[in-house]
Image (cartoon, rainbow, N blue to C red; front, side, top):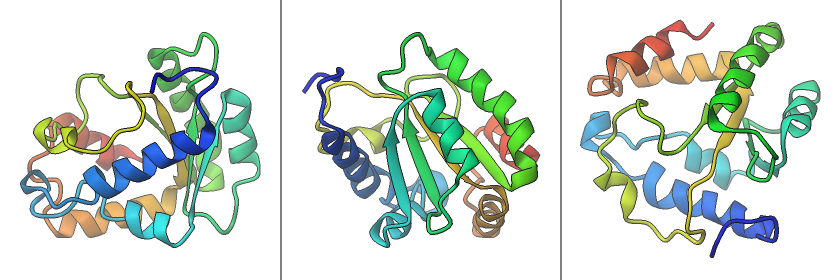
Length: 174
């Protein structure tokens, strides 16, 4: 299916679910035998992830009223007019200066942008995608919980094979 304004939101949510189940939850040599995101599936299975479709206003509403019963809110700005990947990254960077005192962080995920963890593409290709194109997401979560999770992963060698740029990014989150 092609991604456009008529794409059902439930289909977008199922796409993210498939990505978690079939990519993020699969053990990887790149992550020292751990899955790409070992916390994603348990949080999703327990109903602690909220997936919202919207733009900047949705992000602002989320940081103003972060749901106490959620570990993560994913905002998919796929229909936000004129919100290009570079501007999503800049927006999140500026937003983080204001929300870190509220123990929140907004992390942009822009597919097809150079960098990241450099996980081998072959580990990300074989899954039952429902939508023919990738789309950006903004992950909003509690900074203290993210840092605690990163510390646990560090002890298990998760970051041994990631790029130095990504490792520096993880270590610099404050």
